[in-house]
Structure formats: C-alpha cells, structure tokens
Length: 502
Ligand SMILES: *Cc1c(COP(=O)(O)O)cnc(C)c1O
Image (cartoon, rainbow, N blue to C red; front, side, top):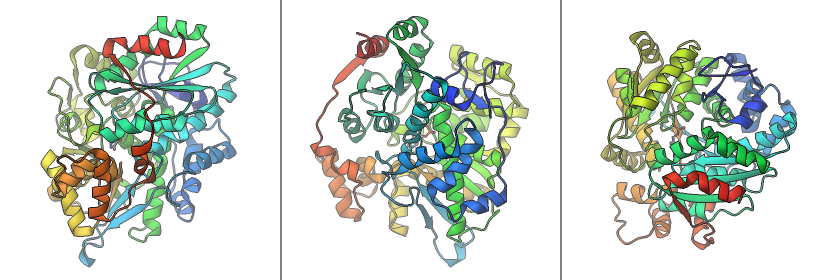
C-alpha cells in the first residue's frame, strides 16, 4: 500500500515515510492509493480474538512495509497498560425485551493512560514512529509538534515521553481546556517533553503549528541542529489507522455479545471535532464493515452539521466554549480526506476548496457531491441543555454514566432514531471517561459544584455514582507541576527554537 496527497499528484510513499512526515510537501494530507477490503469471513475470524489480535490484521492491510511481528509487538506495547483486559469494552444498553433488535452498543475508548480516546492512537503512534525511523535509516531526532484542545496533548505526551530519538512539544489554549486536562499536561514527566500555554483558542494553536510546519526558515534552523519536524495531530496517517481498528474490533465484540449477528448493519455515532474519529469509521465502512449510516454528532459549534445539511462549509461564525471542549473546533482538518475520496481523488478540486477555506473561510460543494455525502452521513447537533439532560437520563434509566462528549453522541443518535425511524443497532463512540469532565457531569446530575475544586469533584462524583475514579486521575492532586511556560500566539515559533535549538 502506497500513499499520495489530497492536493496534487505526488510520487507515492510508503507508510513509514508518511507516518514520519505527517503532512505532505504540498500541504495536503496523506491518503492510501486504494482502500483495502475486508470480507465478512475475515470479520468472523476476529470474533474469538483479543483486541490486539483484532487490530493487527486491519493494520497490516494499510501498513504493508511493517511486518506482522512488528505490528503485533507495537500493539502489545501500546495497549499493555490499559486498565481493562478487553482494552475497548462494549457496553450494551437495552431498555427492555421489546427493544432487543435495536441495541445501543457503547464502545468505551477511554481506558488508556489519559482516560480519553486519543490514547487509542497516540499510544500506538510512537511505537510505529520508532520502527519507521529504523526502516528509512533516519538518524535525526524527530520533534513532534502538537496543538491540542485538551485531550490530544496529554495523550501525545504520555505516548512519546522518553521515547528514544524523539522530542515532544505541546501547545494548548490557556483558557480553553478543563482544569483536569491542564493538570494532566503540566505534570507530565519525561526528559524530552515541553508543554506551553498559548493566549488564544484551539484554532490559534493549530494555525500557529501549521505555520511553523510551512516555515522554511525554521525548518532549516532545526535541520542544522539535527532535528526534523513531525506531527502527531490527527492529520497524521499514523493517528488514523489505529482508529479504524476499533470499529472492526467493536463490531466483532458486538457479535460475540450476541446482540447482533455477523452481517447486521449498524449505525455508527461519533462525537466529532477534527473529523478524525468519524473518518476512521468512514474507512471501516468503505473497507466492508457493515455500516449503514455514519452519524456525525456536533455541539453548538455545529459547522459540520451545517456542512452536511447545506453543502456549505463556513467558519465565519461565532465560536462558543462548551461543556464538550474537545469538540470546540471550527476547522475540521480531516474533512479534506473525505473530500478527496468522495471526489474520486480530484486533487485540483480539493486544493481549490482548501484555498478558498484559507482565504475566505468558506467553500461550497456541488449538489452531486452533497448527494453522495447524504447517502453516507447524517449530521445533527446537541445543545448544552440536551447534552446535560442526556447524562441524567442515561444514568437514571440504565445506571450508566457518560461524559459530556458521549452524551452529545447519544443525544444526536436519539434524534436520528426519532427523525428517521431507523432503529438499526447503534455503535456509539464513547470518547472520554466521565471523570475527565466532572463539573459538567455533576451539574447534569443535579449536583452543585459551587466552591468545589476539580479534584474534589472527582471524589464527589465517585461518591454519588459509585463509579471508580480512573487511577491516572486519582493521583493528579499530588503530582508535581513541571511546566508553567506561556506565550502569545505569534510567539510559538520562537518557543520551538528555544526548546530544541537555543
Ligand atoms: C478529540 C475528541 C473528540 C473529537 O474527535 P475528532 O477525532 O477530533 O473528531 C471527541 N471527544 C473527545 C473526548 C475528544 O478528546
């Protein structure tokens, strides 16, 4: 399998090169030349395997320059310290016997070291990168630059800390992440890590990082110090490919639980921000996973809902801070890959869309492209009140506790069922532990959080719900603060040079 760019015809590259580069030289994203197929028989063969056994056959279809042994070893190391044997538990909510044919399967993607779904990819990516460095004979040090809206940052830090031949630097919006997310990042240990707050929002951070990647002078200065830039943001192919695996793994688990049968079509629901997680589901569907609709769930920053429903992507709008901060995004970078595939690889058109987005903040797709997307996607959003209400409703009805992002997905899924009367089984991506967003979750349950700090809220939520606090969060209160760096959004490049060169 070789990889090409979404924006122009480039010479195809191996997956190891693509994982190290992160972004194509023409500014486009890497995409596989073809989308491999998975048969129902292959899916059947996954049912009796464990998570790693289910992931490796999927990975090996994309990462063809890695051996099965390398992929197996990488996965074992990546997922070893997850806090459950199954790695990705599937919780099935069933109201009553009558709703047996319309189960709601929730895949908990947050049992990794940071209690959010980005661990699924960011634990595996460093393993793939160190092996890729050897494959291409690279001797320079890799500097991973990350812009984060909260969860990516810590997950990347945890994945890369003290990984040989790498350094990692994370930029986060000073007032755009939860206190717990911030504590998780500023307490990160490791000789090769830097964490810097930026006076601005997530898009400012992401734009700053994009500018650094595009700046020839900075690259040259880094090269002189034997450092090469790379990305761990969800535009990196090495981030996406581990995410495709869990859709297959959870479908296999769904069969194993006997709530669905092999071949049954499910609707996949994903709380969406940068469009990475749902794009992975799109690849899984294209590969042959029995998926009917991809349900794209947004919060009140519903730029994607509007895009799918009107055909216009328009970022000229107000930006809201919500109780689902990891979805407070106005540029969903991975959408570019979808546009590439659904225009049958029309790089000129994709490039035009992205140029327009860059200059005017918007672009419009034609009706034939919109019709294609309509067949695949359903998009809607949840208001803040709907999100809170769902947390309470699910807890009251099922004794099951979800975080705010997962509640957005469940709320939109319920609208979908009401509007379409399609009661097919649901596969819902649960993207964070409820203990990562305790304030909003406690409020949703009708509890006052006044005067209770974030760490005490962990205990309160535990007391009220009798759910366990994930270990990594329980120990935050006593961890030492190691990073207090802060900068303006136009100083980010300078900070990078300060970290690795000066
Ligand atoms: C990152 C994140 C999302 C959004 O995922 P994308 O791949 O960016 O669409 C949703 N929920 C949580 C908790 C996240 O951390």
